[in-house]
Length: 505
Ligand SMILES: Cc1cc2nc3c(=O)[nH]c(=O)nc-3n(C[C@H](O)[C@H](O)[C@H](O)COP(=O)(O)OP(=O)(O)OC[C@H]3O[C@@H](n4cnc5c(N)ncnc54)[C@H](O)[C@@H]3O)c2cc1C
Image (tube, rainbow, N blue to C red; front, side):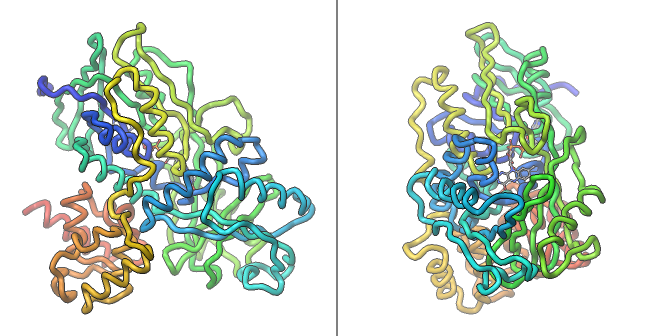
């Protein structure tokens, strides 16, 4: 197939990868006045960025690996993200049952003291000790646990965080192309000439002054293909899997549980009816379609069953998912000990050629700071670039009124009195202050079009297709919403039929 040349379009920045890092950099760069193109070979967030444990956290366990810089930055970011995306990020308290043979109480207290203070100013409650036998914090645990600690972090809808960054980027002028793969690129002095392959298999060419390689697990492959030589930086692919089971207790708290192999496993209240349990750390070669193994299921059930009053088993699992961490290879023998910090590598060819910035590692939690640092690295190529701005600007839908999400839900209840309050709350949790754009002039549920189950109507699918790059049923059911988890196979099939019919029209 011959490539069509769009020679008049020279972008400042071409970003490879529509995960959280690519989308975050696209939004930041577009807001600083750069002409941005982002290409994602599949759906936005269809790889690592929808396979996370969904925590916005400092990472209590990283303190044991002396990752103070990462923990401090992540804790500070937790506050920023809670402020700019309150519809999809919410505080969550974790119970840590104390087991004296693993760590003395003074050590945990010292760690939690650091955790409370490392990030600077915080709005979340500080940590405290609890009697698990007599307080509600022990609910869900076996009765053998007496002493425990409670600390704060936050949870996030990881895939929606990516979509919101991409939306924000587009609104600032970025060109976001899904199902579009960068298949080749070469330098022509100070520009890159790129070949892109679109959803129909046809190719076209574009030029850009700089490339950001935010390809996640594919980062080294993209780097080596583009530079024509294997780079020195390397990536460790470490799979992590999760299981979702019916709720293991009725309270709001999560658990952080320690395993005999010195790892930790989280048990998190999820989507009202479920508990999310994970994760594992398995070095892997296959990163296109990672899947949980029976050993991982056994491992996760084995750990949590040492703690939980209500046992979980393979038979109770309603959903599983896996992601592959693209970690910067720091030479650690133990996959759990490999740094979770990010590393940016700038390659400017012979010295003054078009640059490629490759992103290794990172966390959902630190994506915004990573984006700022990526643009700092590229500043000398774009001296007129505007300063950093994303710290205080809400993500799309995050501009809540005083009183936050609860008060906005009350406003929506008043605006749409015939619509069910739980339904409205679910839409607000996905779209924030853009809820009215999704519902438009709907006065009753019949105005929302076909009903597919859980909280999904045709009106929202149409919005996701028109505004959020949804193309396939999974984009709607498992990434832009988690309605798929609450629906029967027949209901999900009806969504498939509806989306197919839309495409055929
Ligand atoms: C099991 C697990 C649990 C985690 N838990 C947490 C957590 O609780 N909190 C937290 O903060 N972080 C967590 N993380 C880390 C976090 O998920 C990742 O750091 C982050 O998602 C990486 O995002 P990314 O954009 O670099 O990669 P990705 O999301 O994988 O995005 C890269 C994209 O590049 C695209 N791509 C690749 N090659 C090309 C090409 N040639 N052309 C076009 N597109 C291309 C891919 O299709 C992919 O979508 C977890 C990670 C895992 C695996």
